[in-house]
Image (cartoon, rainbow, N blue to C red; front, side):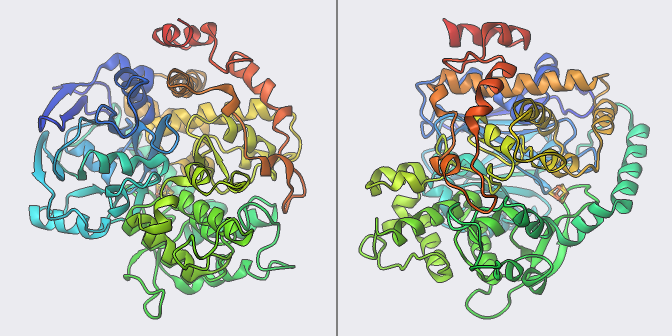
Length: 616
Ligand code: SF4
């Protein structure tokens, strides 16, 4: 079959897990052009195939793995996306990951995999050269994600294959379980996608292939490749990002009050003068555990950190990846933990169990605050002393969460549901939006983050519309113009994520907007303008919004935790959401009362079929 347009394989793999039947089908060119890939394309399929009465942990929920046209072809664009109805929020869920799995899926012959139904027994899929085999995974059930990744590939005799795997957390339906790849060093972490995979009894999706996917203009793409490498190697910021990765940003964003501490309640880390900051930041404490760097597919930035702690109570396997900024913040200041070795150990445990470190760190921080305030005590926590800063206890509770043991079984439900069990005012300490624990950037330090978090379809993400960089160039504390800024950043992010770009490629200017569009055009062979790309992004964002509205979301849920609206921290301000929200709705073309995209907006975006669902 000839390619659909450059960059795509042009095939979707559909696997019915009830019947153990896999069939390939063509990818519609019209749908690809309109929704691009990733959570655009996957979101369209989810919208069409999952009705509101299907619960996240229902066999009729879908689990999709979707690449973009640039995945595995353009530089700094190795991403794939997992899409499902989220067990954490009950609404649209997606998570994305880098590494090598997305590129290999396309080489194996597919742009997208759709899983429906549920297997009776544990299985894994092996997708290779356009074929899909379904194997028993009984012997791998119960293994951690890294063990399973290695064992399955070894037993298949396919060491070069790439596996997307769940750990024990996914098997146990922990609501913030993720799906790992690259031997549990990368993770599609957010929204509980791993719990859906565990519910479907799929331990792994293994891909292997030799298919070459051509760009529409291969010579022009070679030139772009050279230019991107030149740019990365000559830009001072990108060079320092290569050297230090995301942990090197920690001190800078700490200084401006962007990093939450002690469950978003304080503006210091370790007391006056923040003595704990250098202990966990790079350079500083982090440098002592850093042993190497690693890159995703065709990425000259190479921001992934290899860490080593070879001895002592926090030792872990050598040559595996260490904490990124989000993890460093979530288990560091937000849990009050001052030892980078403990944070690195927690990071590795989360990778092995297949737990999202943002939700895991936030949930532990929530429990720590409940403990310190006397809402729970050691009688509730299986004897664990859950005070802020107690790293041993954090490790202990992570084991219990993944295994759903004792108090861990309550926390495995995520903060919103844990509140209902703990009761007695715990709601005040649950820092989530729509049930999902928010990313480690404080809306009190840059107001636009607040309106993004409040309205993001998946409940507050750092890769899908973070306004921080743009706000740092202006007045971070002003609300003026922030609604428009959030919309613009979100629409652009929706487009580039769907295309397969890594967030950092755009966030840190390895690509300009123009060169990103040029790359998209060179790969696909279309002639898209920036404005058209923004329209696609807006369509995708509103499709996700429409899914939520169809599945029962209300405008009352477009809000932030009270703490961020009423209590100050390091930045000494609160997030003035009410000053931005009406303007944001207006700019978005959303109905002021219900929050639904208006009929006019849906028609303008070519989402005609959603009108009936939302407006009758
Ligand atoms: S910048 Fe980092 S996360 Fe992004 S593709 Fe490169 S190595 Fe992967």
